[in-house]
Length: 159
Ligand code: PNS
Image 1 (tube, protein in one colour):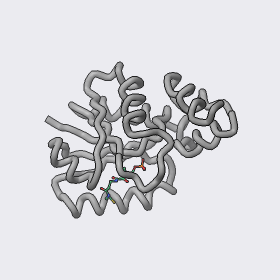
Image 2 (tube, helix red, strand yellow):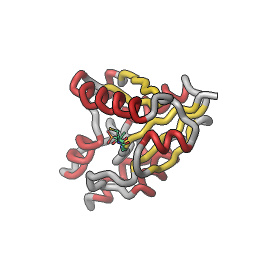
Image 3 (cartoon, rainbow, N blue to C red):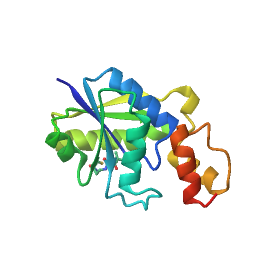
Image 4 (cartoon, rainbow, N blue to C red):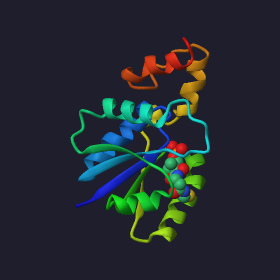
């Protein structure tokens, strides 16, 4: 049974993330979307909020489970019996950081491999940070995030 993990901050989940989740779920038996709890970045949404939004927007996908984790990703992967880490690559600028993470994780645990999915061209410019910046100035984020998430972001900025 192949269990894959798609880890990230998901602060908040974007349409780009959702596209990767749908495609990764298609090629794995079970996909665990793993939300990082102890990020050094100070997140806009609490881990519970991020988990709840992800649960809501992925409820149409049977083999997806949303969990949170803290500490090393490879330890979480071991605890949930996952041997594949999925990451999305939007552009060449993502590659250096992603390669470093993949190599580090493989050295920490050589039973775990990272698989990269290239992001859909429609979302190759998109990041959670961009979404937050646009929303903070009252801009339209409806092309960037799932419908369920839109109002949640505006509420954070009292918009
Ligand atoms: O969405 P992000 O912020 O790009 O996701 C980064 C994430 C959560 C995948 C990464 O920071 C991570 O795995 N953190 C857990 C700590 C860890 O295992 N670090 C070693 C890998 S270099």
